[in-house]
Length: 503
Image 1: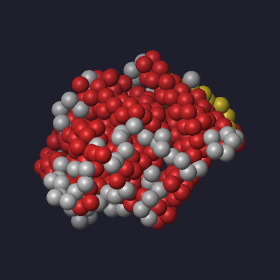
Image 2 (image 1 turned 180 degrees about the vertical axis):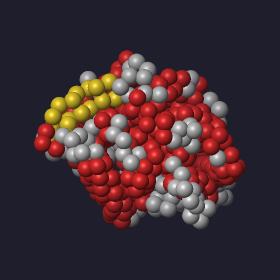
Image 3 (image 1 turned 135 degrees about the horizontal axis):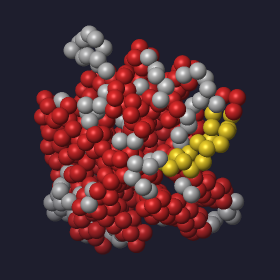
């Protein structure tokens, strides 16, 4: 059944292209119905999943001469991210209800992107996963280049180049693993059982990990992210921060760490104080957390604040993976979900509710508009989403960051203080953005913006309430995700990681 999340999205994209010209309303409705169908399937599958089970959806020969299969399967980790994709897909359309320019082409590319993302999360054949991973690049480039705003061609091209470089590194690693394993299969679970030598894993792990981590915004390969977020239209920003960056983190865990667990082991010597690749990537993740927060703190553009905050929060995910303990890795998966929801909501507020009405993202221009009165719903949602992003108890971000911090304390106690600095700075930049955008004192000559700005629409209100409610649900009852994530980490697929590097 889960395979239909892919097929329905692709069919919806194809159907969009045969709609007659000028049928913007029909395109919106078709896109919403398609995304809702995919989300409904994901929700049903999530509800019926048995903890610890890896459900094989379909397994059929694709290129038999090379051992490549059309193999789709799902466990608790992939189901969590599939559910996230369904939520972001639906709400992204609600926040794109105002698209008038080439509407059917916009939603066709949007659904193509969604279908490819579903494909990545469901693929258990590495070659099939790589194909879906590459398909993602095409629609996201055009969504930014055609419907974007600030330096959209530059942002789209930079994103595409970084993505292709990372993909090339991943492909080299996959081919190397395939050849070393005997050129018989590219199926994930079979390759995970193959006894790759430690020397090979030491070479393959950093190649594949960095290849995926580029898309996850690992410092110093993060520079595509803020420019891409700022250039993208609202729905594309939501997808980019909400699910596309998670593809990179998912690949780091699902492929690099599962296939090459010994690659994170000690080198046997120290280079510049580092004794393993794990040490290197842990430090880069911590730098990303603090750097992203510091740069967000000094931004004058509202959307750049959220863009750099995504770099900081993705650093938490990568750091959680490098703890190599169950609570830290489970926290990283929780953070993938939480950040996807909250970043999507923040970009929706900044891009759709504020920028589309004021036509500026400059704090100096937004301050005199007195937006807390002009757009009270947007102000309330940003305050709540910002508090959730800070890690306020009762929201999903608190649970995820707490689990990661506990994992870091067990693995790298001294680094926990630096992570704490990143969290404190995160509170400051959200508070600063909140004050400058919504609660700055209006100038004496300011107009009455609440009489001039269009009100928040019903689709925007529904989308915001959905995202905020999901964050509250996970924050209040995190077991809804942990009950399937933790058993997945104890499944046979992760046996090599547990034996090779688990702390």
